[in-house]
Length: 139
Image (cartoon, rainbow, N blue to C red; front, top):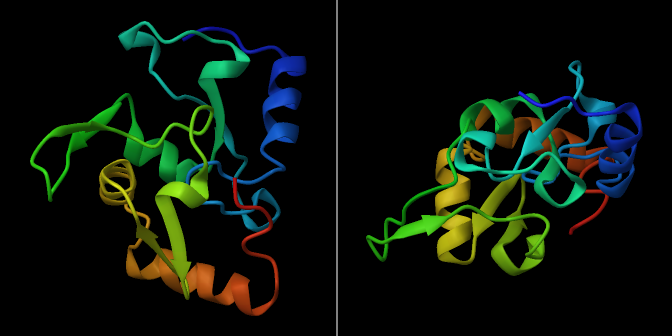
C-alpha cells in the first residue's frame, strides 16, 4: 500500500466535507476514523493521488475492499461501482427515510456490495436525520 501524505489526507477529507463519499455518513458521528480509500484499487493499477482517493467510512471501505464493480441484478451485466470523482451522488442514489435507494445500475451494485441498507445502517441514518446531522451534503 502506498504512503498517503498528511497534506493529501487533509485535501481528501476537506473535499469530502468530512463525510463518507459513498454512504454520506458524517465522520463526526462515527466512533472510528474514516479512511483514505482507493476508488480503483492499487492491485488494479489505481494510483495514490487525489483523483483516485475518496474518504470512506470503515464499513463502506471494508465491504468494497479492492472490488471495482459487480453484476447488476437487473441487467445481468458487469457494472462499475459509483465513482465519487467522476459522478454525482444524487444522479445514482436518493434517500427515502434512512434507506439509500439506487437509481442506476452503478447505484444498484454499489448499494448491494457496500451494504448501504443493512437494518442497523438504516436505523443509524434515521436517527441522524432526526437530529439534523445526516446528510450534510449530497455530492
